[in-house]
Image (cartoon, rainbow, N blue to C red; front, top):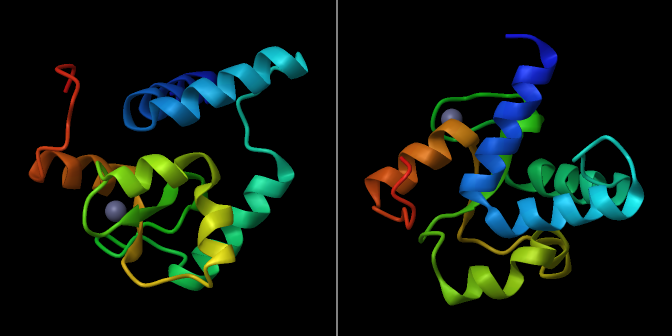
Length: 125
Ligand SMILES: [Zn+2]
């Protein structure tokens, strides 16, 4: 795979796993005119702070590349709470002093966990 295929794959993963984040990223892309769906510097810094608190590798498989890591709600991703804080998730974790109930997972393990917990709402996977 070349770099553009990898970017397309990540964009697809994001669209499927976090449709609200994907929509927000698309909107930022449109607004900014930039050719990137990358997080803002501030969001990246917030994510790095959260990973430093919860662990800088996947708790299931040990995958260490932060580009594919995110913080997972241990009790499941479909809760009302998650929807409420989704847009400001990393900021919320920081503001609440990194509360328990969250863990670091890579995208692969997030997908596997959602499959195991039957959290999928889409018939695509
Ligand atoms: Zn993993």
